[in-house]
Length: 173
Image (cartoon, rainbow, N blue to C red; front, side):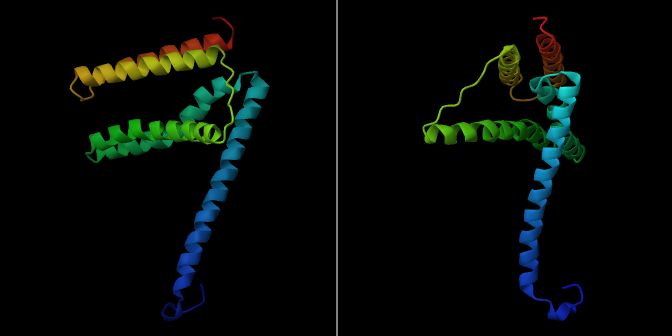
């Protein structure tokens, strides 16, 4: 295709290469994500940290860096409501599809999924509930506008969450 003159270029090349490019991007994302998980697993084995702690810190932070950069760019372009919707909607979509879809498929097939609830998971569920209730109450009280005190409270909740997760990881709790 590279050596063909433009007037003789076949239209099916564009469609075929689009599909091939899409499949290659899926393959690269799959390979890269497997390597990242492998590296983080190796960090867990070397340091003795659990996969839960590494997933709640390193994996979660690295997963959100792209979203943070994109949301800041959208705010700087003058669309703060769109950035707020993306900041809440993106992780919510990932959570609902990432957990909801496998559980729904398993339930539809009549399978049971057994979860082993440990102190880290209990803290995760507790702090998820606290942050959701805080956000709902703050949005209702502030008439569905977000102000900096709400962000400060959420950051405080996150920091205390990390402290308690580390304490639970090292069996202090």
